[in-house]
View 1 (spheres, rainbow, N blue to C red):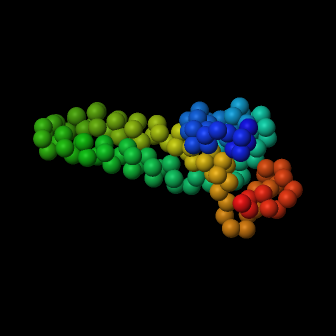
View 2 (cartoon, rainbow, N blue to C red):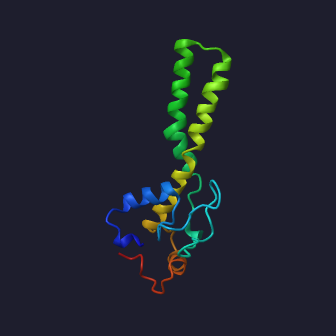
View 3 (tube, rainbow, N blue to C red):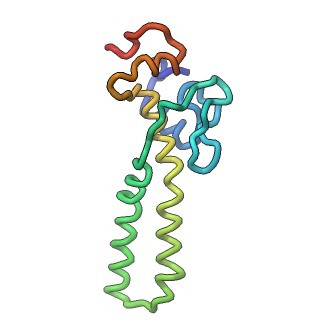
Amino acid sequence: MSAEILPNTFEWILKSGWKGLCPRCGKGHMFDSWLKVTKTCDNCGLDYRFASPDDGPAFFSLCLVAFPLIFAVVWIQAVYEPAWWFHLFVSLPFMLIGCLLPLRPIKGWLVASQYVNRAVEAGTTKLWNKLDGREDDNVFDD
C-alpha cells in the first residue's frame, strides 16, 4: 500500500508504527527485536536502510513520560515525604516502565513517518528511488 492512495496518511503512520508493520504494505514486520529495525520487509521487500530515527524515540519518551513522572515523584516527596523504599519500589519501576514501553511505538511512528513523507537527506534521492524500486530521479519533486 503506498502513501499516495491512503485516505489519511497520519492515521496510517500511527497504525503501522503502533503495530510495527511495514509502512509500505502494512503486512510485513518492521522490527527484528524490541527496538531493532529489520533490514527488509518480509512481505514486500522494502529496504529499511532509509530509516534513521536516531535518538528521536528516547527524546520523545523523555519529554512525554519522564519529565511528568519526575514532577510527580518530586511532588509526592515534597508533600508526603515517603520513606526511601517507596521511591525504590514504586517510583523507579514507574520511571523504567514508563520510559521503556513507549520506545517501540515511537520508533515505529518515526520510521513510518520517514517512509510516508519520504523524508530524505539532501542528495539521497537516487538511493530512495533504488530502495523504492523506481527508476526516475524526479519521484520526490512535487
